[in-house]
Length: 255
Image (tube, rainbow, N blue to C red; front, side):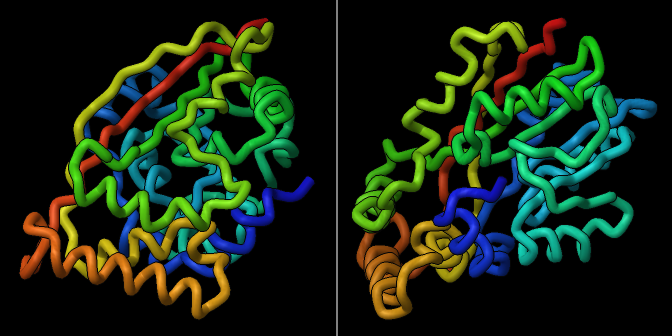
């Protein structure tokens, strides 16, 4: 099965902005994920929808064997250049090309809301060994900060049918399920320091923005530049602080 068109088209066009504009994850959040998934040498973890390897790189440092799955060729190519020691595959969350009971843990960074939830959980359950664990992580822009909220207002008219992780509808796949135990959660604060051009790249990396026809895409990015030039928190600054909330979720395989 393929992936949602906005994701396939948008992310295929945006691997460079994704690398430049997207944050990594805070140390505390990654420590939590590693602890709850029991990642250490001798364990095998599958990083599903791995993108350019933002989370994958942090999993490698746990000492666990890491396998990456990323269906978008352009994104996976960046991951393979960055992490040549990681086996990377082109399958999707709903059709993982790995054997039954082949991994101890599965992680998903910034992506579960794109999945067909029930189908993905069935596949994740299949590839996990008994007692295996699933971990999800998202960086959410902190829209309590006025200029960050304005970024969202610039982008949202172009969303179309693309899912919004912060809406939480992805949780429906877990309620109820015989496949996994209850979700547990933790939140962490995170600040991404980047240049104004990096903020523009952050918006350019959004799938539904990247998928726009060029005149419309250029107009969105121009609006972002104008916001950065006029807002007192960003005007004239060589480095901008883009605040996030990082949410981590985990659960255990049943059966």
